[in-house]
Image (cartoon, rainbow, N blue to C red; front, top):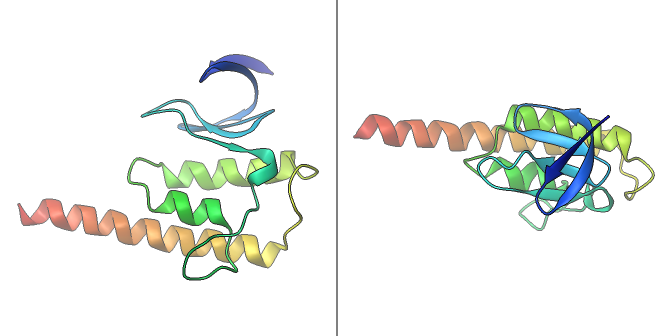
Length: 120
């Protein structure tokens, strides 16, 4: 496994994507456009949005325009597998629903942004 400076500390990289990595800490960006991290213990926190039965991180990050959401989904699933003993258990249906809703939100946000660009 690789060690790389992520933020202010060295993290052991377990999996590496284009923008996201899974580390011994949890889930992190490679720092582009800025450092963002989710501790392994927080991976299955509930979303404080319209549908509280969903997981926070797939929904929260879907609304951020800088996120490579496809890469995030892969990293999130890897992190869930790697850090199973760190977070509160959650059923597969909740994970699937959260990722599906998040992806729909991300695609709508992306379409809205592209639509705004077409209006110029």
